[in-house]
Image 1 (cartoon, one colour):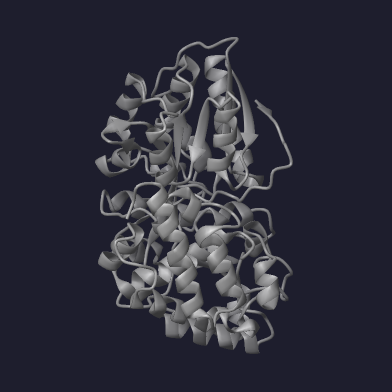
Image 2 (image 1 turned 90 degrees about the vertical axis):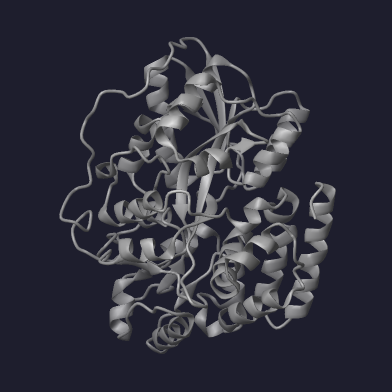
Length: 462
């Protein structure tokens, strides 16, 4: 496995994507603070089994794969690619894309040298690429693995106009709050259930001498996650769907309400690690690691992040389930939101090697490798849950599978990339500007609507 580094900064696994039944997750997370390596007294090691999928011999063939993953997530994905190399004889070159996957792929296509396979984070980008004719349909072997291992909902997400193009290899639940158990204990606070309790707990933690909330504001996608969780819980799924499709404007009163609520946190510098400037200067990986480093004096007590934060926590001395615990995103309305995400593998070259990799990624064999490494959950319903590295991840994965097709895709990921998925523009920048000045709700709404209208109109939307 050859990995090339080109100096591109990438976010750690920004797989984002679906809304799953809240009650299922709440049950699954009950008791997630259990001790031991997996929270259930086990080690979380899957049993050794024979390969479930046959792959062709590809000796001498080269394959280029691109994804946004860096750090621990890149390392774990490389383990998957290493196994593909071992079983096929192909040589895989991993190239990090950086945050702007759409721009990266576009430049490669324009130059006549696109990668063989790309891991996309946005269904909107998949649809855009398919419309441009950049994607190659899944072959028969990959479709067979999808039919065997995935529910219709996940298969539909990887299709465009009925043609299957993508394999959702990695999923993530992004409506979680990870917290430093010692910081909570020292402050005398427990896990809050609703937004009012969340703010109260944050205030109490602040008074204990630790900044309560870590925000990775330099990565704009983290701010869209904050907004979407608040909006979904407060406005409800029907409004959420309408805003995602731009069937209602960002100047709608429901958006004002959500921004006002979010401003109750973003407008309190004393509740943010490093204050406003610190939040704006902190990337996603640091927002996690600073919460679980520093012993009795961490820079923050909690961070709202997906399950894949476990990979970053593993880089600290904190033990998941003991030092690092998790609770569902607090309810702003009647229910806590549950937003999960996904990274979808697509082929940009119609080669035997590219199709073989997509087939492998759709199998339980590939999913098991990363599940055992940690910081990963799979939408593959046939994956043995014993493969997961710890009990926390196992419970989150079980909740995802138990939800079946009862989900919606992430709001910003449904939008054209120019609005919902590019650094320094659209929703990412608008919410960074909101973090700078949370009092300017009307101005934020106006800019969001201007950018959304332009982007959707350009791509034939509302």
